[in-house]
Length: 171
Image (cartoon, rainbow, N blue to C red; front, side, top):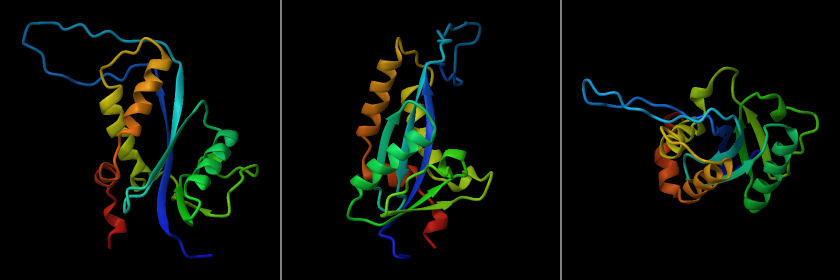
């Protein structure tokens, strides 16, 4: 079947207690102290987005591996049960694993190697991280996970389309 109801771009990103420090403006001659967390607990957000419709599906999972990818694909398939999806992915090993179970309503299309700029989900990661982890400290991974989950749940299809705009699909 070469007829697809939507093209969705997929990627996963790490979120953890190791803080992301950004630049800021400070008064000349004053030193501003910023607390940082040196822990390395983390989780991963798996996301598929459509730049054209704003449709999106996200899961928070503990690892990047074939088992988690299978769980994600299964849940994405259920979420999009009435649609045939062309899912654009990068060449990560767990995306090409022989143990990967690809549902009937999903077909994978691989991006060329070393071309993250072609994946609009990369823009989504910047957007989410700038609003949830940049210059912030969380006391626990659970609090961070809750904050990221709430932020993602609040995203509208319009925000997804604006953030993940992909001009090369519009021609």
